[in-house]
Image (tube, rainbow, N blue to C red):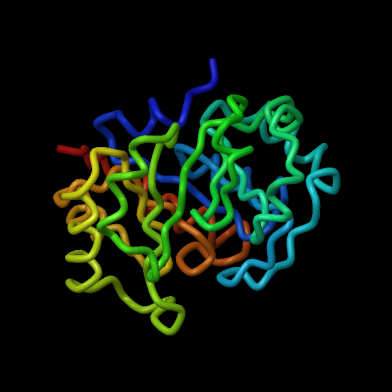
Length: 231
């Protein structure tokens, strides 16, 4: 039975989500073999961290089906990088392909996506989002918040105390599960501190895991070998 994202993020274990730099089965298999708890793919996106342009869903259908057969954990998808692209998404079709949740920036989520019931939802907030507003997200059917709050010029730098204070300020203002994406170059030791401040999951992307089968397997394995539990 497939796990839901909500169930995964409410578990005691610190979850490791892998955001794939390309929609390829060999990269997904590397993440699965390394013990990833959940996966995330992209469509209709020019992706800053990976440098890739992702096409529409029909270009990847067979691969997505293969991933679903192989992997029982939650599978998510970024539906686009503009609200006009997102509004054309067929969530029923995506559910049939095996997706459990979608992931979007707040500015790209319209009423259609809030009203649909096919997929769970995570909302990403950026460095321009007012953290005082985060409590309002709890009024909607949102399963988690991705804290994509690192400024572009700081991508790939080590996680620092200022970052942790920022994440902690969000934790103090919402009960929703929080996910920290690896906009900074997160290392396994960072999970200990992130767990202590109440983060529920890390999302490892291109900045941390690289772009090859070998780098994805080796990097994700270093994170999943630790049994770090949320308090």
